[in-house]
Image (cartoon, rainbow, N blue to C red; front, side):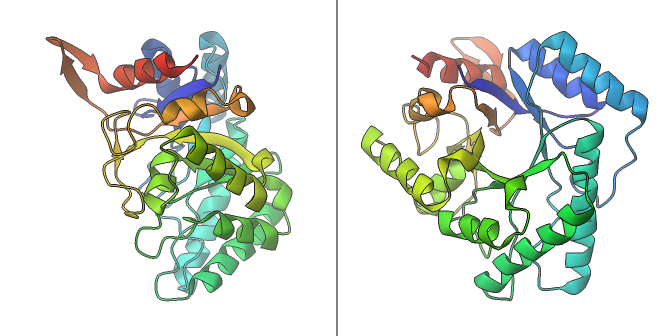
Length: 287
């Protein structure tokens, strides 16, 4: 069975996200390793890293994933912002190494006032700089995006371009976000369309590079290029298409992380945590 998790808060300590995940019945977890709206975070103390690993072992939670800071933009044409982004992302990889986390997932970035091709080239060049000095055991997952504004990575071809231009391509993989690819215009509403999308991914990028998934429904329709997540089955994707990913034998051991809205909902007069509701919905789709 695929390992299902969700993004959880590290408020109170990195290990807290693991404990929350265990309590909710998840198999895995995604976290920020620091405040996502700050360029630099407080150093991770050795005892905090040790407690993180100890909690993983005790709970059975596996495949933790770090999501990088939203401030980082490796495609920026502004030299000062690009320099800060390279330094910040290098720090993200080093923090992951401290926590013994294999993958850091990131959005390729935004080209803003420049061309998309120049922006994509800057991302690849930035990775060459980063991988030359960052911890060697950490890999990066390029996240598929919705393509909102000037955000890069909404087409498989753009991710393939970054990988192809990077001298450290063996350290790059992909995290497929269901809301993002749907908003970008990839329709997987039927089994046939799902298979066609995955065949296209395999042809352009290679299915072996697909290491993880973000499972999110979408507030807006297919091709809208609007990045707004919704609870599973409550958006424009609907419930059933998520079963295509969950029951694909190629991904039976892949981690899949929810990034759906948090909070509580009332069902049949009872209050439930949305994470619990989404987890139950997904597990009921597994055959």
